[in-house]
Length: 405
Image: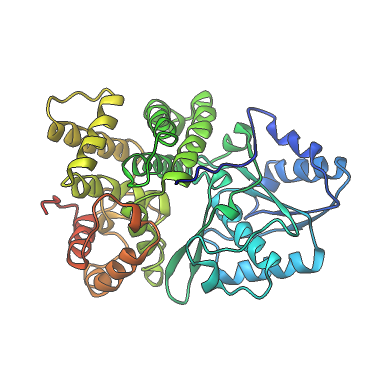
C-alpha cells in the first residue's frame, strides 16, 4: 500500500491571498523571512485579511535563509507564549520550512530536533494549530510538501524533516507574490523545481498519481523558466504553478541523490565565505546524477521518457539521455549557473576559481559523501551509491568531469 497526500485546500491564481479572509480561528501567527513580504505589502495584506476573519494576529519575523535549529526553537517558544490555532507561513522555502519545524515543537514541547528528523516518525499534529503556507518563490514547493529543511550550523549539515504530518492544511499559490522575485532567485528556484520533477519521475517510489504531475511540470518549466528569468511575467506566473505541480509529485514520489548531495554540500564550506545555494547545487549536480543513474536500465528508460516528453529527439535510449543532459546544461548556461563547484563563485555566478579551494573539498569529501548516503533522499534514488561511488560522483561535480562508472 502507498499513500498520496496533498493539502486539503489549494487556492491559486492572482489574488488568492484573499482566501485568508475565510479562515476560522481565534489567533494566527504569521511567520516570515527577511523583509520582501513586508516591503511589497503582502505581509500587511495577510495580516489585514486574518483580522477581517476575526483573528488576533502576531508576527514572527526575520527567519533567515537556510533556517537554523536555533530559529526553530525561538519560533516554537513564541508560539507557546501566544498559543495560535493557525500558523501562517509566508515567503520562500526558508520561512515555510522553519514554521513547519516550529509547529512540531509547539505541539510537542518535549520533542528534540533529533526526534523531528526521524523519517516519517512525527506524532499526530493539529492538536493545537492548523497550518497555511503561502509561497513567494517558484521552486521549493514546500507549501504542498511533507518536507522541511533545517540547518545545523555547528555540524554544517542540512537535515530534511520528512513526514506527511507536516503537509500544510492549506496552500496559497498566488503568482502576484512570485512576480517580486529577483532574477537570480528565479534561476535557482526554477532549477530546484526542475530537479524535483525529474527526481520524482525516476524515483523508486514513483506511481501513477505522481508521474503526470512530474511530466507536466517538466514540460512547463522547459517552456517557461528561461523567459521568466528574462522578465516575462506571464511565464513567471506559469512557473509558480509548475513548481507547485513538481512539489506535489516529489512530496509523494520522494527524491534522489541530487538532493542528498545538495543538502550535504550546502553548508559544508560556509567557513570559506558562502553557502552553495540549494537550487544552484541541484542545477550543477543534476546532469551528473542523471549520467550516474542511467547505468540502471529502469532509470535510463525513465530518463528516455522524459526526453521524449520534452521532444528532444534521439534514436536510442543512450542518445536520449545525452540530449537530456545537454539540454539541462544549456539551461544552466542560460540562467548563469556554473557547471561545477570549482567554478561556483561567492555570488553564485560562474567564475574561474570559486570559493571552495580544491584541497578543502578533497579534505572534506569522505565525510560529505558519507553524510549524503545517509540523507533521507538517498533511499528512493534508482541506483544506490557506495561510499566510493558517492566520492567519485562528488568529484565529478567539483571538477565537471564525465561520469563513467
